[in-house]
Length: 311
Ligand code: PMV
Image 1 (cartoon, protein in one colour):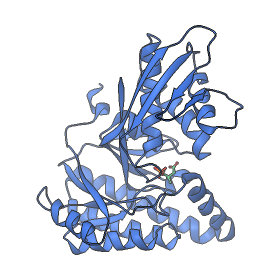
Image 2 (image 1 turned 45 degrees about the horizontal axis):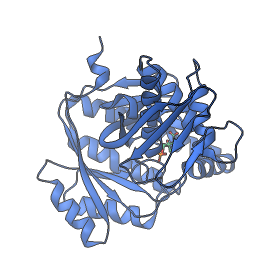
Image 3 (image 1 turned 180 degrees about the vertical axis):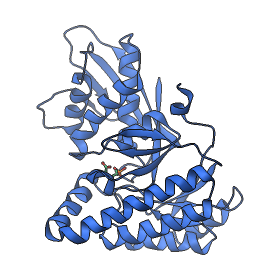
Image 4 (image 1 turned 135 degrees about the vertical axis):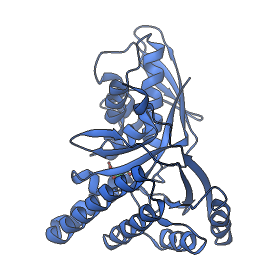
């Protein structure tokens, strides 16, 4: 059995696709996978609760294509049967598909008796993600593999952030989902129509993300919260928010959050709010419940990055 983290993007989603930096954190809720070898000559397969999907690079089922892509990326793996399980709502911006991909990559390597280096796990899981999302930046698979809090760019990959203090985050679920591919393609279309405005917004988000990295490392939560608020405004201006996401963000701020924004692709799914303290999280959850939304609290500890553990 292997695990991978879910994630929240604290700042920089969408802009990261165009090369801007983004800040992500792994969260406790994630995914697991169990893999076993099957007889040589058999086809690798995904065993899901109600169906079995075979790995097929040219098949009609994108889950089968994704498994084939993951297994074919890099050194060949023997045929496997894989059982994934996600603890995250699907297509909600919390990195469910990346967490599943990372857990499968680890479980497949383990079943094959191979080491599970983070680089190979990320590469295989990004191949899996590409089938579902077309043009993933790789931030989801990096956060799912490494956990902790990280700055990510397409060019440089993940860099760990040294948190001066832990972050208490409250996740609100708008109850709807959206396709990452559709949302990313929607922004690409808007950019084709209005390149100057969209590129200006991407540059603004890039600057906010870099300021946020500094605020995280300096232990300035009020500043981080204000940067998250500003990031949400820019994302909303790019048509990536929804009424329920705006409502959740406003409810979080009204209940004492230091900042709040949509997280991930937007168009539905989740938002993230930065709480003042552990005790500050409960009023946010109550505010969400009072409006008919679900949520949960997650913490990013100051001393918990696997990246930081490596010399
Ligand atoms: O799939 P989601 O909701 O976790 O969004 C991923 C973040 C995006 O920046 C929108 C896309 C990407 O590949 O970075």
